[in-house]
Image 1 (tube, rainbow, N blue to C red):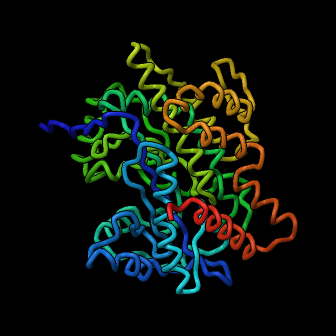
Image 2: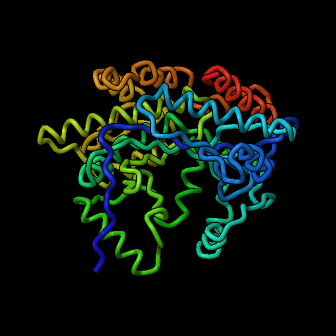
Length: 384
């Protein structure tokens, strides 16, 4: 009988961010499969070893930039910016740049090549069509927690806030040159994969291990790495990992999401220490609200009780920022948390992309604007 996966507890609400970025041609805007060359360039200083913070992904048009373990959101922002500048230098030498977006608006997945590697080959062979078309880009935020049971309780509670993260990060209204009508088309593409979507309600860490044992014994997964829920415990890092966000076109938006994640996890930690149980919404409410955020983004009205009462998502965001301000002061991320209000004012990326398109801007120019937005923010955030 399995003894279960141990949870490597974190001492506090540490922070880590993973950002998947799309490599694009500077002139034409399409995705370009140059990741192997980019990764080779940025790895030169490491004597043949791979770069510790810039990694390959399933398709060769994508690289993932990750931070180390950070204390504050500001530290994570500098960490990301420094690595992204390395990506920019390597991409620029090949007439390319990069963007943060949930889905590229017009390049067809069938025109792209996959990265080499036994794990990727097995993934596509096992899952087939849903994996073959998985040219998606997301942002994952890790926040440290102090026990496996706390991680499970936090995942349960965070599922009620998932629509807020999803709506504010939504950046994928277009796919294969068509407006899908969704704020986050990436969400529906990714949901076609197994072990994705909303996490099931789990009682405690033992319950999570029962889930893992069942699927591993059944041959459905090999490790916890193949559990791709919107929010999941990460036993090896000692974190709760939030995986529901589209990749975003600026670091300040990414860091606003990270601040919200860190503040919520810390607030649940304090609540549990006081003997309270963080509230968990009904299953049908969670699913309905996720759909509303996927479809309407920040224009969504969310269901807030069993009576079917709804409230505007934007109003909920404003109240949440005010409620979490004391925790943000403790974590030194007040400015980043309050940037969520800027997202509600300016509109997330899906709103801005549609506005440009409505003004007669072509897809190539939309991609160009996304690229310039990110690069300007990266250069302004780097430590040097």
